[in-house]
Image (tube, protein in one colour):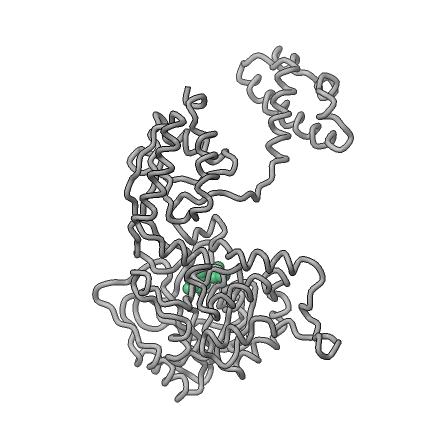
Amino acid sequence: MKALRGLPSVDAVLRAAPRALVAPKRRSRFVAAVRESLDAARRTTHNGDAAPEIAAVVRDARRRLEQAERPTLVPVLNATGVILHTNLGRAPLAAEAVDAIRNASGAVSIEYDLDEGRRGERHVHARRLLAELAGAEDALVTNNNAAALLVALAALAKGKAVIVARGELIEIGGSFRIPDVMRQSGATLTEVGTTNRTYLRDYSEAITPRTAVILRAHASNFRVVGFTHAATDKELAALSRERGVTFVHDLGSGTVLDTARFGLAHEQTVAEAVAAGAEVVTFSGDKLLGGPQAGLAVGRAEILERLRRHPLMRAVRPDKITFAALVATLELYRDGRAAERVPVWRMISARPATLARRAKAISETLAAAGIAARVVSTESTIGGGSLPEETQPSRGVALTAVRPQELVRRLRRAQPPVIARIIDDEVVLDLRAILAEDDERLIRAVTSAAGPKEEA
Ligand SMILES: *Cc1c(COP(=O)(O)O)cnc(C)c1O
């Protein structure tokens, strides 16, 4: 109780604080930090600790203020080996997309028809390019794939029923669950089949006059193996046509290029899903496509027109920045340059020997700076709900540390922050998801975080 009385007042702390902390622009935030600091001190003095000196409160409050002022959205180096890391912003954009964003930052013809000199259509951008790449009649862009699916179900099945196989009632990270999206769209769910086996007749028997849609959802982040069966896309397309319902396919990642070209398992392409008869195929812009966050819907013109006219479209329409980056990315595909220019594909196609050479050069530079580092073999993954269970042989730099957790924490505070993994008590910087042009930045960040000075 005596210690409590010894706590300095807010005013006393403010009087003792350097001017920069109490300047008009910062004062109110510093006061809040001082209050927080005193509250924390009050709790520890309750436990019998001595009250802190004024200078200590100033220091603590400054630390709190600086912490609160630090930006939360900062560029990082993704040394996790996961190419499409949802927590790290998924696909890094191609330089062409970045330029397009810069060019679109000011006034642009987002809804302006330059030929006619009057109001134009936001939906024209990317429409033809996307349809072409997908071999579809038409295309539509939303904020993300979840939104594309939501609008599709709301436009096609509100107040009606949607049939989904039990094995496809998926949850993607970030609490995206098919049954929840369904509820929000106003459609009701008809589950068919079992977790591992669903036959065409299960769908067929479940169709009633209330049924509007058969939905297929890509099992993005898991695989069902063993005693399994699923109706094929072609079967579902034929059944849908025959019974007058719409076949919607949520492809998840969606890829335009054939993943088998890169030594990965073949992932059904967007064009294949369209060719197999789905009337609407939805997928993400920032997964294997390698573009900005967006939801892409391709398919039959008449069906997509119903989506386009739905009032929800207004709420999920993309901005000019998204369109700019998306169009620039799609143009790389159109021009056959995606494999060389889209970072996702550059990362996927990096050879282990190339990664090993880079890892060796980085290790040697770090070693010269007194940081124990060596080249290690790793397994990287694509991530972002594509090619589940598929790994690629990769190479990384292992840093030996007495306390790996501590080193990982320091790397997170480096400039730029480096997000690393711990494998077998070693801190591993996987190079799969880092482009070669960032190796220098990686070296600088690691040197500052793990240099001999820090280790002492
Ligand atoms: C990733 C994914 C989604 C969600 O896509 P977002 O673009 O993140 O909204 C939906 N369905 C499947 C199958 C997915 O893999």
